Length: 308
Ligand code: RIB
Ligand code: CA
Image: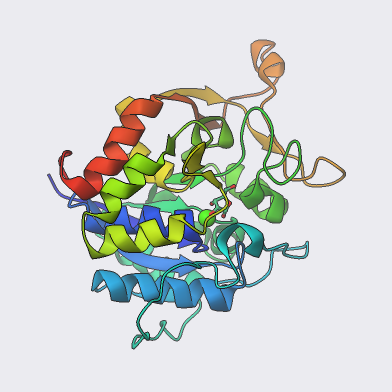
C-alpha cells in the first residue's frame, strides 16, 4: 500500500518530537514537510528543533518556517512545559541543515498543488499557518485529503479551565480552519489526556536505540504529566489515529471556537442545537480511545512489536 502523504504544521515541542519521530520512521506515512509555527516556544526555536529532528533522523525532509505570532492575539508560549529551547533534556549535535528560504505557507501551497494525490495536513500547534494558507490560496482546500489536528477538547482545557493550548493561542485561526469546509478530525484533550505512557514504557523506548534514547531524555524534562502518573504525548495521538483509527471512537459533532471573551479558545460542541436541527456537525471528533492499545502501539513503534 502506498504511504499516506502528510505535512506537519508543528511547534516542537517535546510531544511534537515524538509524533514526528514515529511518523518519519513509519513506512505507512510519507512526511513531505515540517512547517513550523510559534506556539510552545518562539518560531525561531521551533524551526531549529524541527531541523534538529530531521538531522537526528537523517531524514531528507524539508523544514519551512511559518508564522511567529497568532492572527490577532499575542502568543503565550509555554517554556515551563517543554523547556526554554522547546526540547530541553537532550544534547543535540550541531545542526548543519537550513530551513527553506520561503515562508511555510508558500511551500505548503506549492506542495499541495503539485502533489499527485491529496495531502493530509497534521496540525499539532496553533492553526495560524493553515488559516493564512486557506485565506491566501483557497484553491488548495479541494486538494487536501483531511486535516488531522491535536487541539481543543470536549470536557475542559489545559491552559485554563476550558481552553486547550493550541486553540487558546490562536482561536481566530482555529475558527477559520474548523469552519473551512475541509474534512477535519479533532484529537482533543478528552482523548489525549487518556492516551498516556508510563516509566516502564519510556525505559523500553530508551533502550531501543538513538531516537528512543533522545525521546526518553526529552520525556524526563517534559512537564505534560509525569512518567509515574502518566505522560501526555498529545501530538503522538494524531499519528496514532492516522495509523490505527480502530483504536478510536469517533462522532461527527458540531464544533465551534469561542474567539472572544473569558472563554476564548474553547471548542464548543452544541449537541442540543444539532438535535434540534439548528446546527450541522462539521468535525469528526475522537470521543474515546483505547488507552492500553495506544500505549502498546507507542512502545511497539520503537521496539518492533507493531507493523511499521
Ligand atoms: O495542548 C497540547 C498541545 O499544545 C500540544 O500540541 C503541545 O505540543 C502544545 O502545542
Ligand atoms: Ca504541539
